[in-house]
Length: 407
Length: 124
Image (cartoon, rainbow over all chains, first blue to last red; front, side, top):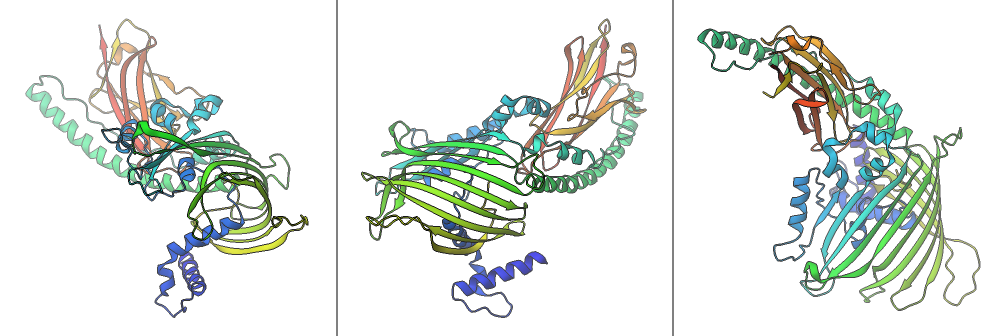
């Protein structure tokens, strides 16, 4: 019911922003476009409050793509299939590849034990390592040209890691117990049985199957009850750990192949990101409600749209961001300072500074309302630097996920 | 059905569970007589604590021939993941440090429960 109300409200708001007339139910046409509009609003929010998180899939980010279908293999077989699907038999890259994988979990998952993970940093590091691979058609006119990127994301520190969260473990301990074992099970048929043995075994089989049926029904109930209990525990953990200290980093080199062939790849820049988030653990009053983020990123040969009619051009960009967040897992206020330096191809570095204040609130599971006010202090070319900040943007919109912070 | 072949002259056997993919599990082992009845508890626990997940059998080795070891495990992933995220459980019967029998279960976390059994044979 609540979600319906929120979605209706969202539809009305978006419809009014795009000029459609809100109408009495049935829902206005604007709502039908809500998915596209949400994406647009999300972009606007991001223009004011830069996402200071290290991208989950840096290869996609460096190529500037948001794949609709991402292959996330969880077994060696599926990983091999995903890789083989990305390259044809002549060694030519297929465009549209998007793979996101935790390779250590895929390769060693069967023998990876939780207690080892909790005890050994090396296993935690390897298990959290994430690889992403993406290919897209290059933006020039050459049909065969393909761009490719390989992303590596590492979590160096995570005090909010659910696998090391003892409170979460304690919560899991309170979930329903295992179903009661069957009273009878079916023994194997003796080799070369006599008629008497076979008849007796048929009786064992009958009572064993009856018990198995009862047991399977109990397992169904157990699985459902556990699912509810476990989801509740995870939700509590998410609220508890929203501002935990963490440190993540990623790199993603990119290449272009003029012919599309794997052996024709030439380096075309890439990106590097790192974010350190400090959660004030041990400081009463702050440990549950505040977080400071330090973020830096470098993009080499980043493709950007030039001015009107200029088409695509490339630039190098370096950004440093500092954000202070105050709130809860469901709503927070953030003060953000950004310093960036950009250099167009063949040009010189120019810098800018921005200050923003943002607020966002969870309206439903996948719906966030965000508001941001931003000021900028880039001096006009040749003009003296005044040192003041001018209100340059007021943005609001809806997003499908949290955009402030790193959680 | 998998068979654990135990040496009559060997040491006391034990049963152990190993849960992969960084999951935690509650588990239990039961020993049934050769007709599949009269279960006796062998051991139970959870893989997330510090206690060993290895248990001796509640009957002398000489009396184990033909008995059935039944087990079940209910798994939990700490973080919500895709429904097709795999799980892997290995149950092994050990004697004198060697694996005498092996069983296991695997599946996806959409249904995070698995069960199995082994027949124990005592070889002269």
